[in-house]
Length: 246
Image (cartoon, rainbow, N blue to C red; front, side, top):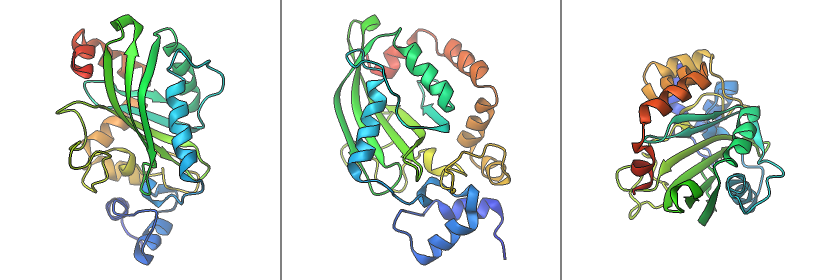
């Protein structure tokens, strides 16, 4: 008997790239609505590290902006508060953002990017230094989810500061605990055959009824520019001080 969409989503939350027969069955049944944990790895660790690094190259003024990372067509960038939540959406939007950010010069230093067996496969701890803020350090923890084509489907970022991280940096420095609260592994579609976010699917609608963060993402994706500007205005002048710990 077919499982209701919400039950499929909840069951998939425990999937890993090394799946049990039961988990593999659930992933297959979910089809296009599968979660990112259902994606089969198709590249070596070095690939996921390199593409995560390539993302930060787009924001580093010392690196010429030539090619872009392999963004999926409906790639999402979600930056947790005090940052502005949905800050990038679609491949075209992300590439446009990469170009615009060169007008706000920065260096990305102290890069430590690593690959992991479970999604998100790329995870980095870095320090941004913005010219506009006198080069003061802004520590960030960021994760990268990929599809089977090696494209980045979801980018998720937190300030790497007490009270703002998704994990305990002493006990779990790379957010490997299964209870870490991240959106990347809760979104129907990222683990489907095309690794494509499905904003209007029944599975997404069902999951959003019990997941306020996921519902918030869907709402923002439907009016990306409007919600981004509203979030920026609401953040006010305290955004940088709070997000960077100054």
